[in-house]
Image (cartoon, rainbow, N blue to C red; front, side, top):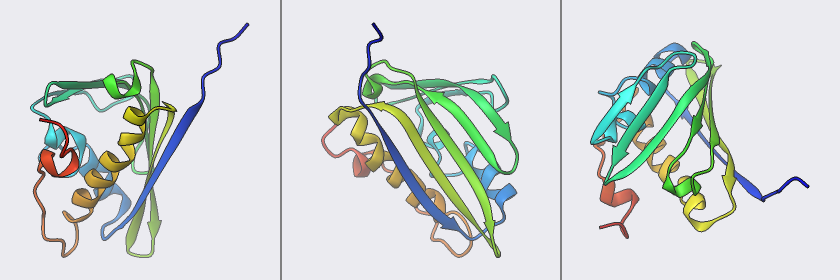
Length: 153
């Protein structure tokens, strides 16, 4: 009999003052605050179909493989970390033109229904808020781990 475990999905959206190609490229550029690669203490990033990534922050490793890569509209990759309880989950990002802006949507699916996994909602919202501010007339807010994770020491 198949072992079925309940999973959850997190959806986060931001409208960003830039064209889709610029936002797509920014998400994959480690020098731009607001993407996971920028916040990492150590990272490996091979942003292409079947490319792998690894990033570590505060001794917490995250890793996965790019499963879809369609510039400028879509990125999908697997995602594993201690907060997914070792289960592989899926992160899908879409970049849709809206007049002069881009609607960026991040959907993190297949997360175990657990408090640690639900914490991804706060994390992704924090990252995307910073990322949004890097475009247009944004203030270019810097990343502070403690703001997103005040209980982690």
